[in-house]
Image (tube, rainbow, N blue to C red; front, top):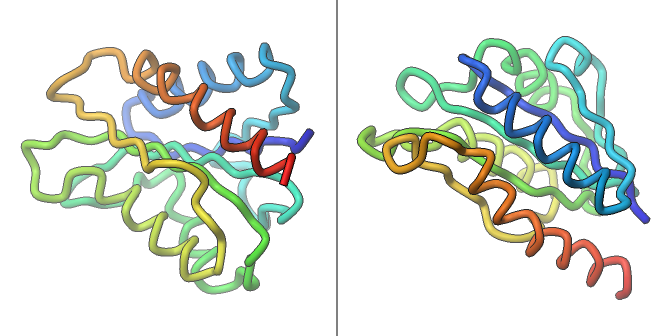
Length: 154
């Protein structure tokens, strides 16, 4: 069973809470999970034989939160080609802004540029529609788990 590395970027703590909630749910489903705090990401290159789940809120005009920006730029400038890496992506934002989930879109573009393959849909959680983003993330998780199991069986 592949380990899941959870990475989050947050402004007010919402993405962190979603990450912690998913960490617990993945652990309960029997998966090995490593939750990285943003200050632990310096030098971290996601192993290609493990899975990556990125949970990121959007700030300002579609910007990446300050806490995860250094890792984003490090990956952008120093990361190797990662064609075997599979990743999932959850974005938190507000659809009343043109840059809805813009930080997540930037992560998607970066990891696709690095050759990684997205596993499942990019879940975009709208703060204008839900006050509990972790509930939507938990509803999305079973389909992502199913895709992981299909990947492992292939």
